Length: 485
Image 1 (cartoon, rainbow, N blue to C red):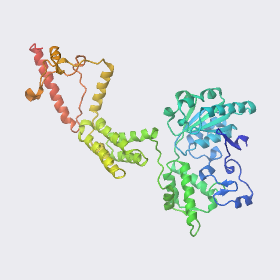
Image 2 (image 1 turned 45 degrees about the vertical axis):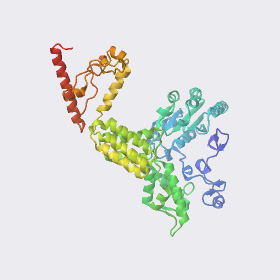
Image 3 (image 1 turned 180 degrees about the vertical axis):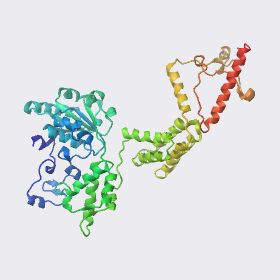
């Protein structure tokens, strides 16, 4: 076994020695094993179950078959010794750290862990200098594993570039955030991105069974029984996160052992719920999942699906999103996607926002759910949204057009003498309050922006607007034929 696996160095000067039962065969001295109390080894507290059960070979890894299955891209690269810098992007507990460690083991490379939370440019220089020395002295490459690489700023990420290009280090960055947003383009272009998927329930169940059967690294020595329904519940609540599943199992086993009972410790559904307390939902209010969920909510509303809208609304609120942010998005939707097809929608969403302000959580969340259902079932129109976007395009693409003189106010004699307000027609003095005068600048004369739909209340608006435009066109045609101005 390479020496690098006997003690992995970290950049803050301390040494992290992996548990002996993770990379080395367990001791065969039964007296040592019996001397340590439950939960401890002779050397001190036992590492968490999730750490003890970390796979030691590629074949032990469950999930990610699209990357490390037989003949797949990442496995082929590792077995051929074709080390390259990469970004491992995936949810928590899907094996990013494990894969990085196994890469070094398979390739016999020096492995250095680096935390983006604790380290900066100074530490980057230190570790790359040591990597160069390792390469010269032993001819061995260094895999630099950077956990949470998305936490590095642009300058810190740039510090890796020359060393990646020269091959001084093989950079393996791990992130739960979309690297397109969080890793700068220069570094991203020098790395391959591998997407890790959440583990499915079968994979999580298999990991739990492995931990239950393993007396050395797992909890097999505790004589615990896990009810099938309890195992299925852990797999479901884990949300594809193996670490979360093993943490829940470990705590549930401790609780069962403390309670005792005939027949040995038994983990039940009730025990799992007590250990889990609350499901850990994947959510980052500043990251991609935030935008994924709000997109799902918005599209469910737009597609008139109240069930989908309620689900994604609930996911956001249960995951810790600010309910007032959700309220703002509902208000926006009322204008953007419902518009004048149902003018009441805007008032209802504003009322839901006020209700939440008044009631707070959890009672106020019901008002948001009520508004979401209303928006989902309301007739839809983006005519106002489309019209206003067209207006903004014209404003951006054209010079600032002057206001026609006849619709300007003339509060002073000078302004009146310059023609401000001249020939203005006061609509309330005209039959049916209809007048024919131009309100757009000359350069935009004849432009139409608002095109109502035939849905909901906007159908009546479409009828009125169509009638008004026909009346104006007919009047202008008549005045033109009579030779008027």
